[in-house]
Image 1 (cartoon, rainbow, N blue to C red):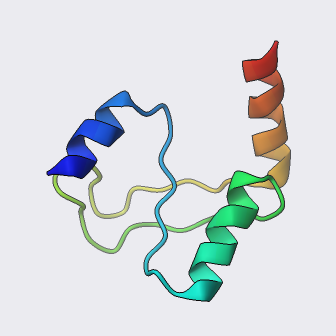
Image 2 (image 1 turned 180 degrees about the vertical axis):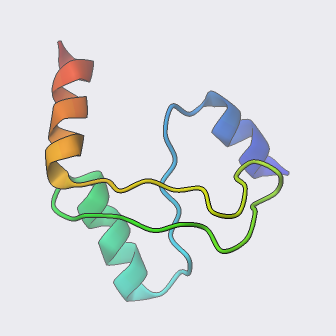
Image 3 (image 1 turned 135 degrees about the vertical axis):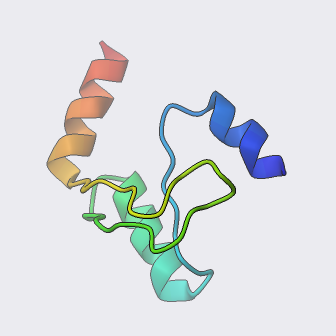
Length: 71
């Protein structure tokens, strides 16, 4: 599965539950520290992420991570 190779190399993963326009906008907002993501997976994903996995990400968290990366 292609996702396995990508996730193995990633330090973080943001998953949207569908390809709907509203979900895509939400993912973009999270990536650019303009939105909050929270939730837990209702099912496992390819053995990579167990059901119930997840965290809350806020713009404050993302800005702190970006500062750490840029230092």
